Image 1 (cartoon, helix red, strand yellow):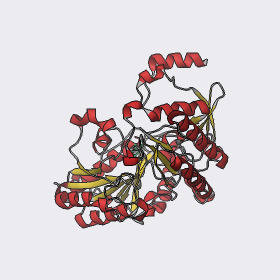
Image 2 (cartoon, rainbow, N blue to C red):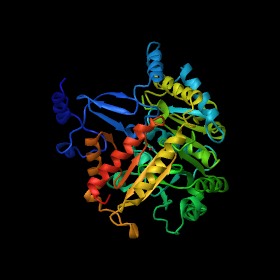
Image 3 (cartoon, protein in one colour):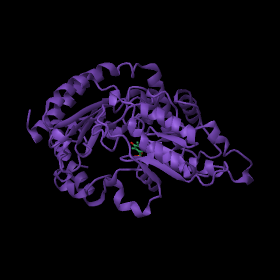
Image 4 (cartoon, rainbow, N blue to C red):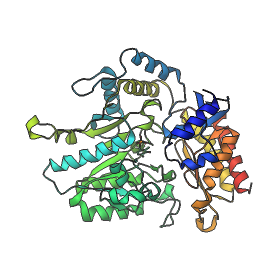
Length: 450
Ligand SMILES: *Cc1c(COP(=O)(O)O)cnc(C)c1O
């Protein structure tokens, strides 16, 4: 097909995710022909730095030789088979590796095929655990304001981003929401590197009061991603672990975005030295090749389901593509790459480069904050620094910067007024520098004030 044919059919028949399709009148989707490391290449040969790891999934770049080979080798054996009553080597090896590496005492791996499904699994496991453990009143979930856990109805119910949720409110579960951390506009006037997370009081009070009804608390450890890469300190997670122990409530860690090295450690919980009762993983798990997710559970949770069939205590949840061997083979290869290549150690010069650019961004009169955790960095734009006054969302400053950056050869996908960078962990230093330079140029062109 020619480019025009692709675009014509796309316009007539496709419906893209998280998109007002009318925006395509202004900015048609870009047909991509191939990928090369940190670059996307379109059908005209134009190149774009993938500054957001293609929605946070790509870990080691596109068209990666080792991942390509792992995928091809598995495809020549079998692409997929039923995972109930059957198993396979890639799933076994993946489970063994994940259990060995995961924070805390997680010993069981349940597989699904996307992040939202993993969240649904974790919520259902926690719910059913209490039903089968003599605590049938523990049926409600607690999440934080501005949380994001996916788009399916259960996952959306524990979400806190009104943009994605408001219209569906009547169909959502009745959950508790606690005021979460807001380090950029800290109500206590503290800074995130030197605080003891007094904002934890909101969650603490809620759980202390309502623990009899609460099955689990679910959070995104260290970075609330979709909320605009809102970064908060590890002490919050230490307090959360303790709170959950005190009141017999599960801690569900949604590391779908932050897992697999994004924060500088393999898992974000490692920064706090704690482990959850249920851990949701996806996105980077296959290096950004195929959809796969995993929920890791403690042996204690698993045992509440283990009994004679007739007790009906089994976890009767499945997806058609559960345990997909292609995806598992890729996930195993991703773990081998982490084990054999100095991916995490080599983040240091990349984070140093981000920190150098941070100095420059912070001088700009429309930058309220430049924050970073691992290889995730975010620039929060403000209409006025004094009072941290945001731009009205209707002005779509982020979207305007997105379009300017595309012209210059970089894929940014700002979240409202937050421009962020979440490149592949092995992005070459000069490419990262170019990405930041393009973002800077796009920002200055749009907002002035260089
Ligand atoms: C992306 C994401 C999800 C949902 O994953 P999908 O695969 O998009 O369904 C859930 N939680 C977090 C923290 C995420 O970033």
